[in-house]
Length: 220
Figure (cartoon, rainbow, N blue to C red):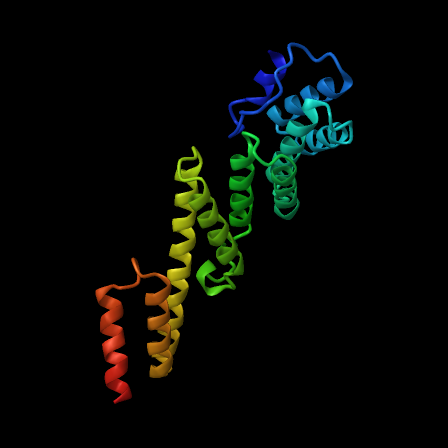
C-alpha cells in the first residue's frame, strides 16, 4: 500500500486517515507521492507546490483531503506559521470528524507556539517582550488539552503549555521587580494578586507572600 506508507513517513506526527490505494494510478495520486518524497527530502517549498496542485483537483478524490493536511505540514516546516495555522484550520473545518482532525488542531496550537519570540543575545529576554503570542499559544494548547485529553499529542501539548506559563510567570516577576525598584508599592500589591489569581497552582509561593507582606507594610 504505497500511498498509505508514504503518508506515514516516520518524521510525520500523524498518519491515520491516509487514503489506502494500492498504487498511484491517477495523476492526483502520483502528484501526492511526489509531494511526500519532497517532504521526506526536506524540499518543503516544492512539496507545498505539489500538494497545492492536488488540492485543486476534484474533492471526491480521497487523496485531496490528506493532501490538504500535508500542505499545512509543508507550510509549518517552512516556518510560515500564519499560513500553516490557516491551512490546518481549513482542514479541520472541511473534514470534521476525520481521524486526523485532532492532529490538525494540535498543529494549530503548536504553530501559535512557534511564533513565540526566542531568546537571542542581542535582544532582551523573552519575558521582557510583548507576550501576546504566548497568551494565544497557551489558550490554544489548553483548548486542545481539554478537548482531547487522551490524544497521543497531549504530552507534548502539556509541555508546551508549561513553557508558556513559565514565560508568563517570569514576566510577572520582572514587572514586580520593576515596581519594587521604583517603590511603587500599590502596583506591587496589584501585580502579585493578579499573578496569584492567574496562576493559582504556581504563584502562591513563599517568596511572593513575603513580597506582598513587605509591600503592604510599606503602604502603611
